Image (cartoon, rainbow, N blue to C red; front, side, top):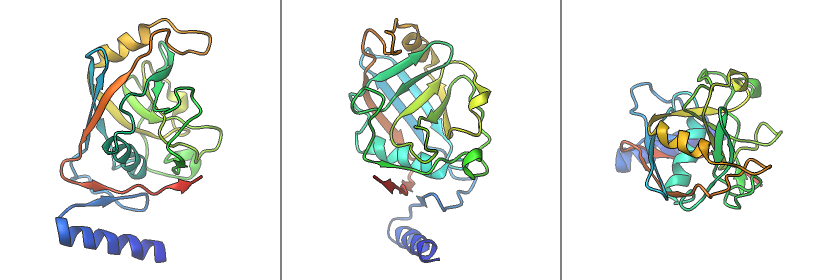
Length: 206
């Protein structure tokens, strides 16, 4: 109850001061809220745009948005690439084991969270995690093919709306035995248009 009341107080304060909206894990996001749009610029000039869906994964979206706003992804690589499956990035160490220093709750069916029915089809953006269902942090993956068997086990939260040719290009780069591209695929910069809304992430601290 205290957590809920604190959230309501924060939301009310935000609205009274700035007219913004706060999205977090316990919030109910109205379908009329415009979705945030992410622009990912690659070092080689490729550009990918992604639409995020706070209606189905509010805290996952809030986490991705706040990391982008902090410049977290700028300069990172796609460290794991499997053609026909997905490309994965967001590890500050570039090894597949790093993160932002905290985790978030996995917003998917088999973790007791309802409402996320976004299937892992080509172009869908989802959160990577370890075996612990609440271990996602900053690593994300973009589907290069379809993999419906991931549905209900990973938090899908967005979709590529432009630049799938860039994803195809990344997926075509030769990889080593650990699925890492032999030529680094570097994210030059990520930006996000939040459509005037403010996002606050609920963290599980390490």
